[in-house]
Length: 470
Ligand SMILES: Cc1cc2nc3c(=O)[nH]c(=O)nc-3n(C[C@H](O)[C@H](O)[C@H](O)COP(=O)(O)OP(=O)(O)OC[C@H]3O[C@@H](n4cnc5c(N)ncnc54)[C@H](O)[C@@H]3O)c2cc1C
Image (tube, rainbow, N blue to C red; front, side, top):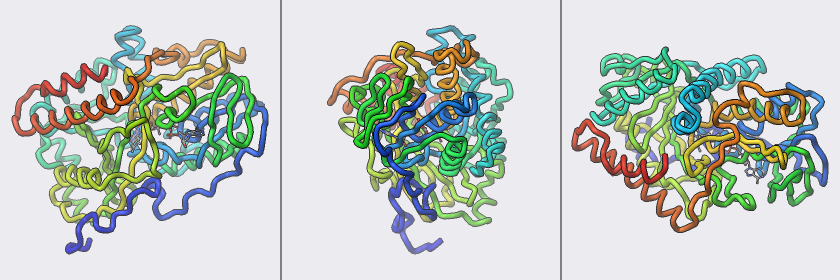
């Protein structure tokens, strides 16, 4: 560490993400050469598209499967995320209300098993993705956060997660020494991953199985049995849309899933003394109970990669700038880092980046196959997509097999998130004003909770929760 330089003086901003730093960006595979046919066409080469291709091809090796990717596999959130492979799924509580608690418990159990599934498949397929199954530690550092943490912990137990631990201040510090942490909740159902190693490994495995991947091939329109690109059209009985945060750019989908930004920073590698001071020997993925929450991991090469919301949403559902984020966001994330670990105040921030994730109007992840059109999709994971995309891939496999008469109903096709319908987002400018207002309220609530030391969740946050339809 150079103590005299400003921590962000040499920060690389963008370049897709830190996970690509030190390696060349993947050379894109050949684009679609012209009109063609397939049995299944998958749009999008992230975790969702690639897991779907993987499981379908494994189940039915004779299927002709084509993946169309606008840039390269791992260009989207799957190549930019925080590497929390964990059992959270967006919308579980709503699904409990809609379909009953038992159905939501089944969904939760499927998510718990999904973490193990990804770890095991990666090992079996030789995907080396720096996976460390250290669980997830979520901490509280204000009285209001502690009250939410305890309620959250109880709720998770009620969904059958009996192996979860509630830790006090001292036990929390025994795992990770975070300034002012008053308690935490730990679940074993989580692992740290290197996102890019996972997605590029998966694309290699899928291709080796015989799936055709065309990159640099943007799909401009999806309609029944057709995926249209500037280079030709793929005709297939099943067209599966796996474009998550980018979905709004597709014709007819502008208001389906809101592209929410999330930004991250990665520090320089910390010294042994710094790690000695912090602890974190268990490599848990780390989060907090703030309304504008943070998420972090200890990377395999000894850095802290830490993320949060930054500017949450760009007007008109705009998405990408190859991962660049605003300098103010970099500074805000650095402040969170220092708030957690004051001794890291001078530590260099090597990289900053951002990406988009998909948020449905009711904040519920879903996986769907419309049997009348053969159109399918999965996503709306609201920032919990690393594991959920795997469950989605296996479920799309089952739905396609069920529809084509190769299989019947399965446990996965009966999960409550299957074929869930949701209304569209409001038109602009209401959408922009709403989302920015929401996050301004959450940030203000966090500040008020920190300064007031009140034990109850701030009313601004409660109001924002009601307004957002969460
Ligand atoms: C910064 C950040 C941090 C995150 N951290 C976590 C985390 O720690 N844990 C967690 O569980 N979740 C996290 N998430 C969310 C998670 O990464 C995503 O939900 C998940 O990767 C989504 O995978 P996907 O394949 O559905 O979408 P993506 O990975 O976004 O893939 C979609 C692909 O579709 C392609 N595409 C889009 N439109 C078209 C088109 N028209 N034609 C052809 N191709 C197209 C894109 O280029 C992209 O490659 C994070 C997200 C971000 C942005």
